Amino acid sequence: MKNSIYSKVIFLALFVVLVVQTASAQAANIAWTDWTNVNSAADIASGQVVNNSGNIDVNYSGVLDAFVDGDTYYKGYPATYDNSNPTDLIRIWNKGSVNIGFSKPVLDPYFAFVSVGRSNSQVDYKFLNLQSPLQDISHGTNNWGFGSYILTDDTLKGKEYNGIIKLPGVYTDISFDIKNPENWHGFNVGISSTSPPPPVPEPTSMALGAMGLAGILSFKRRKK
Image (cartoon, rainbow, N blue to C red; front, side, top):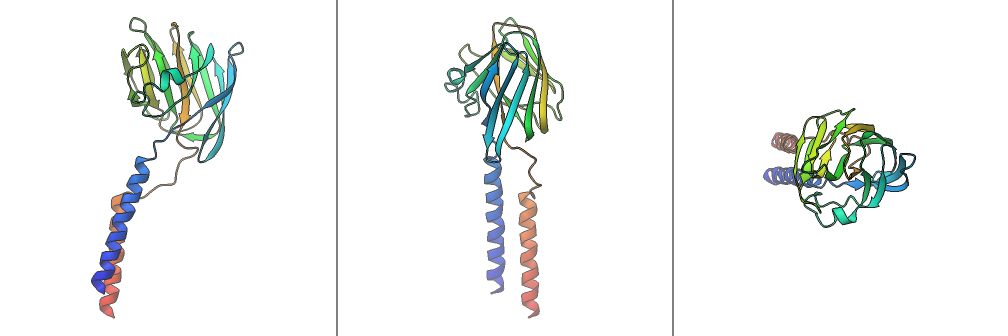
């Protein structure tokens, strides 16, 4: 009987580890902004992003030259965009500043970029209020191929860059400057969550805790 209880607790611990690891692997799903109102003459736009935490309003102000359906640039290149579909595309061909605000705090926002810069003309996105260094999620070819890029802690420097970057942290707004004009480039913004999740014990710690429980049960059994 003692060995049976111990075996069951060990099995439970391993099962919990598997569930936690599977959940972590699925946590990278991205919900992208659906821009419903765009006024390029006034340099403002608004939309909404929806994930399993609810609806979040997104407001845009700053340099804005056009809005298009981005499926032409996203759907044909799944590897470039981490098998997600950013859908909408804010188009820009001038330099200037941008602020994007959220109606709720968002965790780890993402940017999907299309054709930032050209082979002979670099365009920079310098982010101004980062909490942690920028992270490269995916990049690759698009309609005009793929050139080169440099990603520093706070700046994306593109010469025909396509891909996704992540801004680790919790944000109610994001500000950035776009350096250098060009023919056009574009982006969309997405999120993975609306607020920081509660701390989750490491799988190893959970397993050790379960094995400790097994030891206690075994000890009590022996005393009887």
